[in-house]
Length: 213
Image (cartoon, rainbow, N blue to C red; front, side, top):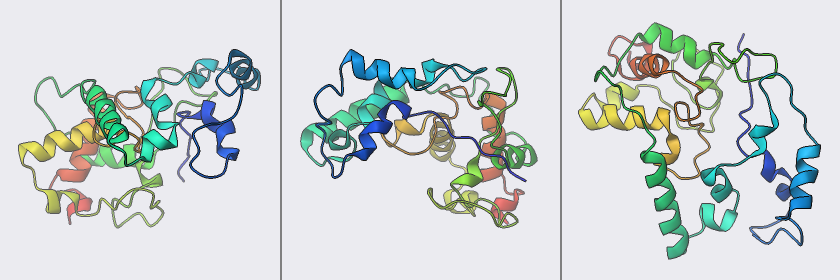
């Protein structure tokens, strides 16, 4: 049985969802200190889930503005490219140039959504929750469709250096390739360790992985 957690990426933007249409003017006072204080007063610290999660970084703040997140204007496109470049610079590549780990461990990481809740320990092992958005192995019939199917990923993509680098980077910080991607920034946000990313890489790319059978 899989457990799921919701990453607190855009909580501060929640009141804006009540607005209809792609407007970016969220009304008088939406950006003032009183409004921010009201939002924070609606939550409280509990365990490792602290109010700091309401503080957006520059990428989250950028993607909270629909005009910039999805706009087709030259300014919006260039702004997204800038955000992507900033996120690309945060990616930590495997120090010893070892890209693949254990695909069996990778399957466990993909299955688990455990971690980062108020009842979890700060140093607890976290899952990737990958099946919540992707089809990966044919053996697992419960999966989400928010993201593309990863079935036969290695068969299709191969194991060229550019494939290894792209796949690692996408897991580590998806915003480097799509500024406002729905995919969590697994490595950058400290959700997954370097070894866990290696294991996920093996799940996707190793020829003996069930993903590529």
